[in-house]
Length: 582
Image 1 (cartoon, helix red, strand yellow):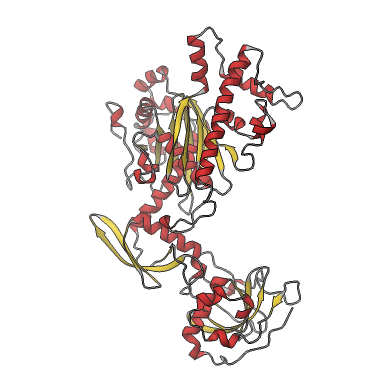
Image 2: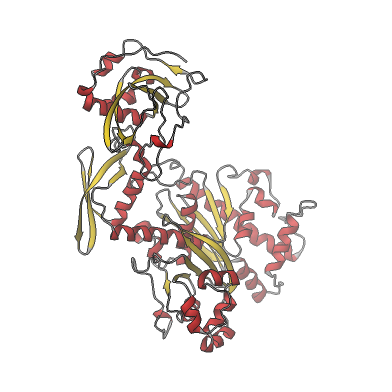
């Protein structure tokens, strides 16, 4: 790294150059607030997912450390990194060795900083700049949310990081209260778009202001922590009285009430804005996204644990509450405290950027994709399957064209858009009739099909597994066909509509077809829908060779269609075996 002359020289993230390198096993994340430095080691897993591993907190780099910066930069690292983390990052816990020796033994690693304190970020950069194998990046607001996603000019990068962390852990919509030097709240809607938030003085600033501008006492942080503990004492709880009879209790109770009641008002508005979006499927982001169905709200920051208690039902027992306000919103949300949301946000961004880089470096021509549209598909839901048919560069950017199985096309998709479609397909791959399955006969034994984790194909060689196989002597109730329906329904060509609008038992007796892989070749097998299982909403299929399988609704649609395309090869198409009850 080059030396810096001022704070503006701190390197900023630029993608994909800032993506962690393949050979990096450990990554450092640092949050520079107004009062402390919060550190975490992040770990890259085999599936390229990056997650936080260990967290610790230290004071800011002090004036004493600045003297060390002039002569012994390694000494600063010794002071701010625990022994185990020194060993994790540098391969050794004794950093008192010569820099040249340490440099030769250290691992490749990158440092990602989220900072509202540029002076601290600059000092950290100076510390790590002595290590040639280290890369240092200051993260930007756009790394977490773009302007199109609701980020406004000068919105604090720490607030954006915590929102990303909350969304990563619970999904959208998200609401985060951050109790630090300033107390903030930030929110997104169910589509992950930032609604906005608010900023006010933190608890310490409130008490400092009263002490500095009045004759009232200076209440330390330790005092109101001790007062909360007394309020919540299991043997003799002493909640703060609304009508306090001593000065310190009166000061603490007023500040706590202000946040508790304001917080509930914020939550009420947030719930109202998202009241009809509990199970929405968002076509704009192509597929089923993670939804915060339980309306989990996060508290974070140095005073986040206090905010957490005050937002609990009955104010966590900290303040006395009436029956009326104890019932307010109690059943509509869950409060959780997580002081490391920033690091989860950083890890989420790095995971996504690592996957984007893989896309840039790989060819996805011919890959299968899926997308959620507003129009119902033939599978009976809103998911449409397709294939990447063209890959090209436009203005220096890689673009993709997709052709869906219903012959519609999407052109000019960017890398991020393609990644979402690939991930959506992965979730719906089992419904893709173009995926060839493997099948092997075991004589009179009913063979089971076990999903291969690597290929996604059905691999009988792994042995029988009857988790979903019908239990002919068991308790599952099998519904036979209704009379006089099979012949009538066979005339219908719109199979998806037919299945979705028919009574499930009306499909019993229909013929199906499915390709399996046997050895190195594909073979078509035909079968018959024998009965319907109401409790699992599935259909029992018996193939002509005696093997058995259960179909979900989407699978039944696929393999009825597959039969329609190959029925001329069915030697037993006139067969309509009797269907028996369990």
